[in-house]
Amino acid sequence: MGLYLHIPFCLRKCRYCDFLSFACSQPEILSEYTEALCREIKIKASEWPYRIVDSIYIGGGTPSILSAADVRKLMDCIWDNFIVDDEAEITIECNPATAAEDKLHSFVENGINRISIGVQSWDNSVLRLLGRAHDKNDAFTAVRNAKKAGFDNINLDLMFGIPGQTMKMWRDSIRQCIFLRPQHISLYSLQVEEETPFYQMIYEDHIMAEPSDVIDRRMYHDAIIMLEDAGYDLYEISNAALPGFESRHNMKYWSYKEYLGLGLGASSFMGGVRYKNCSDMIEYLQYIKAGKAPVNVSDIEKYNKRDEMGIYVFTGLRKSEGIDVNEFYQLFGVEFFSVYDPSLINIYFGYLDYDNGRLRLTDKGRDISNRIMAEFV
Image 1 (cartoon, rainbow, N blue to C red):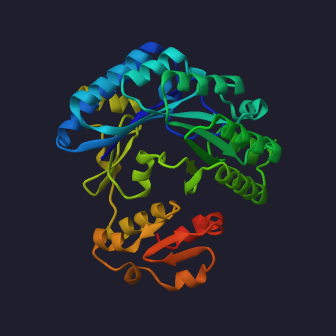
Image 2: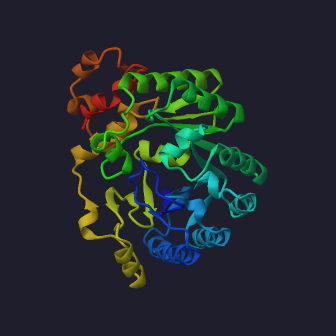
C-alpha cells in the first residue's frame, strides 16, 4: 500500500490555492502537529499490521517547512511502526524558499529519496502574481541544493494558463526545466477555485482575466512537444518523466491501488472503503489525544460497485497507457462492454482509442478528457 502524510502548513497561502493548508511558521505549532501525526501513525499502523508500504508521500501544504528534527521524528516513527519495503519510493514536497542544503541533506539521511519542488514558474512577475514565497533564484538554489544533498529523483512542478503569462514566458520555463534535467516534470493548468483571491480578482473585481482555452491548450501542447523532444515521456495527462522515473506513489491513485492517508483531512482507500480524516484541526487533535483514528463517520464515502467502476475508468484514463479491460473484469467480475456502451469508441473516434484490450485517450482526446471521462462515471 501507499502511505500519504499531510502537512497543512505553508509560509503563506498562495492566491490560487484552495488546498487544506494554513499560513504558519511557528516552530512550536509545527512540532505539536508532528507529535500528533506520530501518534496517528501508531494508531493506523495497528489497524494494518501486515501490509507492506512501498511508497510514501509527504505532501501539503509545504512539508519542507518542518524542521529537519521534526521530519526525522516522522520518518523514525514510520520505520518503527510500518513494514517499509527496502526499495520504497519516499517523496517530500518542497517550496524553494524552505530548501536549505543542510535540511535537504537531513531528508536524504532519513531515507527520503525523491523530492518534488514547487517551482511553478521561472518568471518573477508570474511568481509575484501567484503569491509564491520564492523567486527564480530561490528555485535555482533549491534544485542545486537537492542535487548536492544526494537526491537523484527530482520533480519540478510548473503551472500554465496564468493571467498575464505569455507563450514566451511559458516556453522559457519549460526550457529552463529541461536545462536542469530533473527526472520528472509536472504540468498543471491553473484552476480558479471559489473562495480564493484569484477567483475574486477574476470574477468579482474583474481586474484580470483568465487566458482563453485556446492559449491554455497551446501552452500544454507546446510543453509536451518540447519535453518529448528532450527525452521525457508523458505517462499521465499532467506528468512527464525520464524512463524509469514515473511517480510510483501517484500511479497508485490512477491505477486503483490502495493508500492510507495520515494527517489533517487526508484521504484513504483501504479494504475497498474510501474515507477522509476530519478537516478541523481542533477536532483532529481531540481524536488523537483520545487515542482514536481521526475519522468522522460522516466522512466515510459510500460508493456502490458501479461508482467504483467509474472511479477506476475516470482515473485510469489519465494514464497514457489507459485502462486494461481484462483488469476491469478481474476487479469487478463483469465485462467492461456490458457496463459501458461500446459505441462511445465510435462517437469519440480520433479522441478515444481501443486496441488489444486497452482503452486510452489519444493526443487529441486529452484536450477534451473531462468530457470523455464523464461518460464513464
